[in-house]
View 1 (cartoon, rainbow, N blue to C red):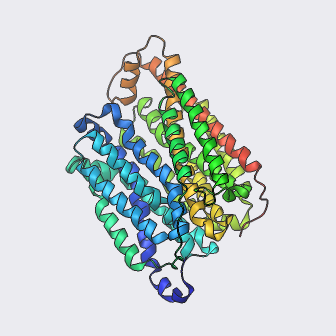
View 2 (view 1 turned 30 degrees about the horizontal axis):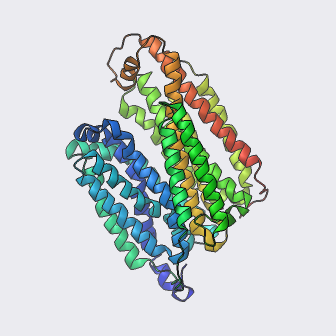
View 3 (view 1 turned 120 degrees about the vertical axis):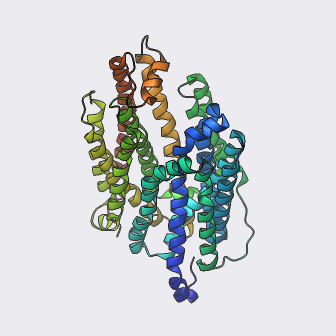
Length: 487
C-alpha cells in the first residue's frame, strides 16, 4: 500500500504508474488478438498443425495457474516486486516466442509468457485499487479498459500487417519494447509501503492441487468432441483434485486461495458472474465471424468487424459503471442485462438462412455494452466486498474466473458445434463441411444448401449453450443476498 508520509510524491508520479498500467494491460490483452491473426503462418512454417491448439492453450493454462499464486504473493510481499517479475517473464516469453525455430520451443515460450501474464493481468487492477479511492476506481478502471478496446480494434490489423510486411516472429517481438517501457516506469515511479520482513510460507499443496485441477479442466475440454469417455474420466480426476484443493485450503494456515474470501456470498457472485459472462463473450466473438463467413460468404475482414462494434460499446458503457452502482442495486442491473441477452440470443436460436446480417452487428454491440458494464462492475464490487488486506487475492481470483470461463467455454462451444454437425451431416463428408466453413467468398461448394443448413444447426447448438450460461447468470444473481446500493 502507499505510504501516507510520501503521499504528495506518490500523487506526483501517479500518472506514470497509470501509464505503465495502461501499457501493460494493452500488451497482455493484444497478445490474444495479434497472435490469432498470425496462427496460419506459424502453423505453416513450423509444421505444427497437430499442436496448434496448444499455442493458445499453453498461454491460458499457465496464466490461470499462476494468477492466484501472484495474488497471494502481492498481498504478502508487495505489488511492485511481483508486478516487475511478471513483466520481465512476459517480455522474455515474447522474445523467446519470436526466436522459436520449432513448434515445441514456441509452446514452451508461450507458457513462459503466460507465467508473466498471470502476474500482470490481476495486478493492474490491484495497483489501481492502491492508488485510487473506491469512489474513483470505477472511472479509472473504465479508462484502463480502453486498452482492452484498443487491443480488440487494432490487434488483428496490426498482426496482419506484421505478418505481411515482416514475418510472424514480429507479432511477438513487438511486445519486447513495450515490456521494457513498463518495467522502467514501474521501477522509477511506483512506490509502496514496505512490508515488514516476515517468512513467507507458500501453500505448496495448494499450488500442486490447483495446477492439477487447471490441467485437468483443459484436458477434459480438449477431449470433449473426440472421446467422451476419456473426458469423463478426466473430469472425475479433475473433481477429485478440486476436492483436495478445497480441503487443503481449509486446513493450512496461509492458504493460496483463502476460504475467507468466500465468506461474503456477494463476492462469490461477482466471481461466478464474471466467469460465466467471459464464456458468453467467446460465443459471439468466435462464432459470429464463422456464421457470417460460412453461410453469408462475407469476407473475413468485414466479418471480423462484428467484434469491433462490441469493443466500442464495451468502452462506452464501462465509463458508466460509477454512476450505475451509485444509483442502482448491482444485482438488479445484472438481472436486467441477463434478460436482455436472453432475448437477443433466443432470436439467434431460431434464426434461419435469411436472417439479416446487420443484426449480428447489433447483437454484438448489445453484448459489448451490457457485458462490459457488468464485468467492469464485478471488478469494482469484488474489491469492495473483501478486506483491504486481501484485495490482491480477490482481484487475482476474478482474473482467474475470466480465464477459466474463456478457456472452458471455448472448448465446450467447439465440442457442441462438432457434435451437432457430426449428427446432422448424414452422407456429406466432414471434408466438404470444413471446406465450406474455411473457403473464400467466391468458392462454389457442392451441396451448398444442405451444408448451410447443417452449419446453421451447429450454430443453433452453440447459442443454446450460450443461453444456458446466461440463465445461470440470472439464477446466481437472483440469489445474491446484497439488496443495497454500494456507493
